[in-house]
Image (cartoon, rainbow, N blue to C red):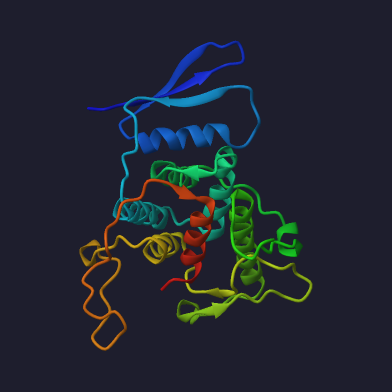
Length: 250
């Protein structure tokens, strides 16, 4: 059985094995958890069979679907999950593109590490996209912080029982501009994660139990499942679209 080892190198150049994993994604996720948060002089990397292990939109869809099921079992709030996601993304911010394994590892790490504290200043900050469309880590960060600001606004003005049918974030007067549309449909990590990939990348199948084909008379009727396609790399703009679909896709 393949095994991936998380290795640590201290500031003297000494190398130490930290943990062994049967999944490359789990090993990459542990590295992100170790490298996020408090700055340090130690380096971490994964030693083992080279990746990637995820190759298609369906691979990512199934991974996100599983993470959502785990998040539902832990009763996490969406705000807590997104704050953890923002926290563990920091070690990857200098990279222009990510492999699917990196993306999966980032979301896996978010599901298993304590969230960053909410900063009330996010509600008042100008988080709009400088170029109108997301481009790079900074814009992806603006999208996530915009969603966190919206969720904080919903705590003040709850969306009510009909939220799942769609509701606009209140965004009170005096709050800053945001990178995301105000419309929300998904308020928990499980539906957010499933819709994030289904809406941006596809890869779902009715047999998964989370999504069904459109009924007769609907646009796109007769499509039994989403098309499966290869994915080699993803940019931060792609991750921004994933996040927006997590918020808005039905």
